[in-house]
Image 1 (cartoon, rainbow, N blue to C red):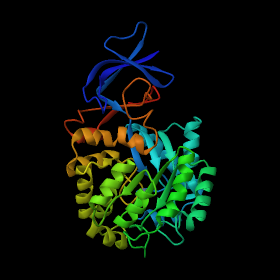
Image 2 (image 1 turned 120 degrees about the vertical axis):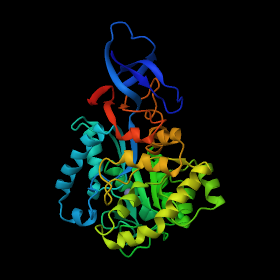
Image 3 (image 1 turned 180 degrees about the horizontal axis):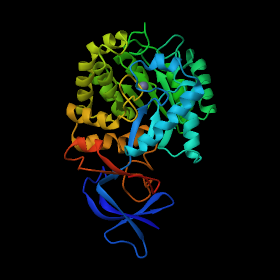
Image 4 (image 1 turned 90 degrees about the vertical axis):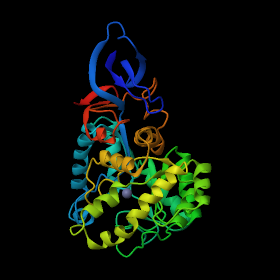
Length: 387
Ligand SMILES: [Zn+2]
């Protein structure tokens, strides 16, 4: 039996446990004060957390200054090869699970299958395949266009037929499609509801890119599990009640506007012009939602301008700077993110029965979020994969 020795920090208990963690079939079998008899013990340095989870990435985008122009120059095969290379980097950063919310040609679905079959070593991957958007809607160039409940139902079934384990809708416009207003409503509630039903039938999670309040309400009422980005105009009391009732998670992706604004003068001007005026509101609204009790999951939107793979440590630093308590920053990248992936029963905790996915950090993340940028070792399904 494999056994790790260290200081373990579970995001719900929040009490460091010094001792031994034993692994059986890739899962945590138990935690003990003393090494089990005959155990082969591997010490882990620093503070050991559950492996970190990034709930929003785009593996076929590079995080370059102009990811769209870059995409157009590459074949689907080349994109797939590049994306496969990012998996190793995620493991080194202590990220053991990812949710890809939109890849060209559904490349991330193929990667997820390759990882699951052991062809590639990488984080566990929940992948949405191509995004579903109305005709001419946000992301149409790389998405699947569908209209009306019947059209969305068919598109959802196509995405799941390809092997996706999540589904993503464009509930509103966004920053990266020229000519589309960021907060404008896209899908109607009944359209998304038809797609959500297909996801729920398969036990898959649903996500909606949603930036304007009307579009966010459509998505929450339709039963979508996670809202990506969140309000760029304003919240109201009704939306908090709706999200509480539905258990909807907010994935603010603060690293996305952060990257675009850091690249001012270099990233395409239309993106900066659309992001600048809404960035401060986005931050204030994220904090307001947090204070109203909305569950926040960490997702970077990695792949967007100057938002490289991996960038989760930056997102966690931004959430902490914004004013989330450090235990909630930790939960955002573990227990809450696991819910966003639809894997809360097996990922995100250091407890018997959960996957033996661990990251050892140089520093205590309950003292400073800067510790996330200092990974020392990563364990995936009980095997030391980095450090
Ligand atoms: Zn995204």
